[in-house]
Image (cartoon, rainbow, N blue to C red):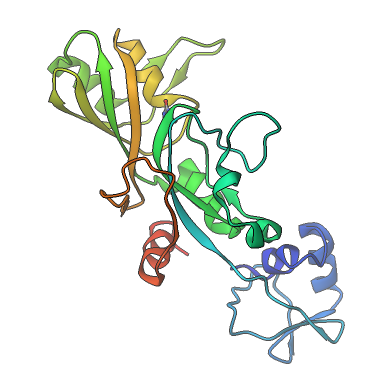
Length: 240
Ligand code: URA
């Protein structure tokens, strides 16, 4: 991760105050004064700030199989939310969901305190693949419609028309399909289906950046830590 982000994550200050600190020669990496705020550092590097060692934050990575009727938020005064699935002893670790699934969308949700990874996984710049299983009502998909989704369509259902990025849609049967998006516009799957007169009845994310949800979890609220390989897979998908 970048030196300035690492320091900001460690609570030393904001990104800009940390950059000033680096510019003034106040930060050393492995005993050498750091000049470049964009310098890449890892947990193995010893970072000192005005001579005091900086404790690098422990990064945690979880995969939640989000159930239906759960809000993608860490806290909510009224509704069940994904924060309710985080063990009490980890509540202080600044974990946050990577992006959002709708209240009624189920499936794969990453929860982490690795801000850089989270940012990149959500950025359209990195074209992260997100695959969804969709159950829908309405007319069957035509070849022409599938091609339109593949080229990108213009959604006109909100104040400003918006063009979707190319997406891959494959039909399973008259009521089920799979769609892979490479961006994450608000309610994008539901809106793409609605654009073609189809109503999404159930939506489940089954894969993100090549990471697949455990088929046995089945929308249960199961939560587990990612393995080292899975963390590497996510990071390599966004060039970290
Ligand atoms: N697209 C949607 O419409 N909803 C989600 O929760 C995720 C993608």
